[in-house]
Length: 464
Image (cartoon, rainbow, N blue to C red; front, side):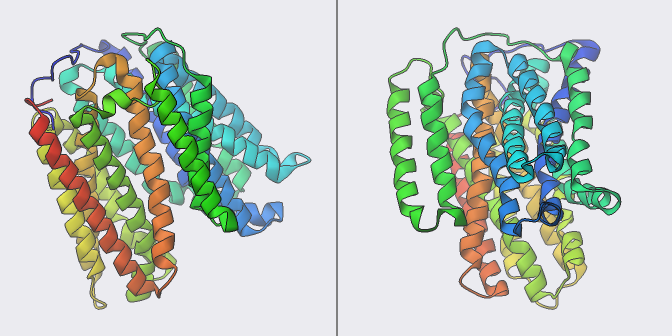
């Protein structure tokens, strides 16, 4: 992975100055927190939505799925538009779309077609969130000097972890005194704060790439992603294999088209760089492992230890708390020491934590569970905070949008695949045994990601 001096071709810049730097940072972090809360709070509200709209609970799952799907589909095109038209412009446009769609979602129950309106609004919210996610890393890079970038990437990671941890609690508190419409409407608070801070403070692209984004390529990659994601859902049914074949065919057509274009949505040229390819592969495996573990843990804790839902939530809490503590430390360390060493160490610690959770004895105490959770969360945070720093260091400034888009793709698609694997693992056996296998599989994924980190150190020439 990277070392202290930037790699050849990497730009060194001083970022923004004075208070503008801090306002810009706060706007970016608030924007990312907003997109996380839009998903993390919705899970808790699904039963309320089902009762209010008079629909089956399984249908309301698409309130979450459409948000995630729209985000994944739009990330690459919006990252490319950020590189060609300005990261600030795409960020603010995504923010505006997110806010408008949030208003529509909050008012959907009062329209003649409540459920279709809500689903449409959630898809539009996902498109807006993609604009924020695809450009946030590029904007952070333009905001801060090169030698201090890692610590602010760590700050961003801490904020994301805090939002994920607080999301269910916030949703529960709001639903206790109001309804799901209010819960959605409250997302306008961080949206308005982000807009107010970002309008004057966000930086503009240091370099603009004068090239047109390919509309047909955007359609092909979107259709390929949508088809492959649908394969992982119960909605596919008997169409699972035809959808899989369609997704692969569309994906192949997209890659072939991309190879013929000078400016591509999918940054194949970056994937040819060993540092970037290894960092991206490790990130994808890491996100798969995290979500797979999170899906399996409640079943293990409730099945083996006999915990109730509330106690299960408390038992898992040390994981996100450890992420909140470790992420800023990992970011700061990545400015000073080898990010390959940090990433590999973190992933091996996470794998050890997952194995220890899989072998958790039935007589385990709260402390036995807590230190295992904390070890796992700290390990993943140590990797994530340093890996984003390595992705940025491996690419020139003018490709910052592509880097942010690929990182967001690894996160969102990895989460979808991890959740799908969790469903497959848990379906054939009883709770405890199946959860064991899921956690061991997550540990294996973490180990594979650590191997990918090892490849980075062989190709680095100094530290980032």
